[in-house]
Length: 69
Image (cartoon, rainbow, N blue to C red; front, top):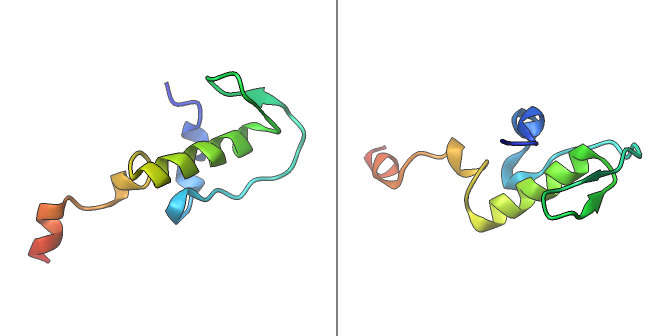
């Protein structure tokens, strides 16, 4: 289950997500506490982008398709 599905459509390139600073503490799967759910997801998207997977990759064409263009 993707706890951040509601924010996936709002992220920008590089895993950036604009969030408010409201105080609504939430813990991620590892037990780490974040100020709110949006900030938790922003960190998750940033890590996915740094790994080169997840949210950023699904918007890219496969290498075989890029070479045809």
